Image (tube, each protein chain N blue to C red):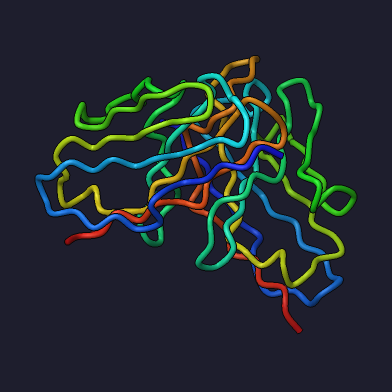
Length: 107
Length: 121
């Protein structure tokens, strides 16, 4: 299985600041990475696929980058609604696997 | 509007069985790859199964031989039959749609609200 490692586990950020979340794959997954946001008590929401393509309706403050084994999700200016847990997922190989998540909390 | 609604969760004893349903609207489940993803309490996400548009199924190793995914095309429902349940199967189970129509993408653009399955004596 491809292990996905996210860092940091928790990120404390002030509203309006930039947040940079990392995801590392145990082997190359090309650009077959998606990012999801999950708020307490809710289902995950697709943010990014293909490492850098924003899902329909996603604000431009969210951006994804990377290829191979190193990926980044950047939120350029955090809004109150962005405080949540973020997961990366690889779909290069079976089984599909997720990272352990990064919790973005208010500083 | 695409909607996925899970049902059938509940409390079951170890070794027991449960069947989850995922009722879809706004699209046809037979045209998309439909997945089940679970989340243990306070933990991350774990993909467990997919049913292809063509009916082929795949499972993660930990549920192979115990879980079966199927589809009722006439009612637009996807099922997850779970047998020989263990305490470690306790989780919220989500059905999730792959956006590709008749082709596989590998990510999930719509999710249900989840169904809680608790395995305990």
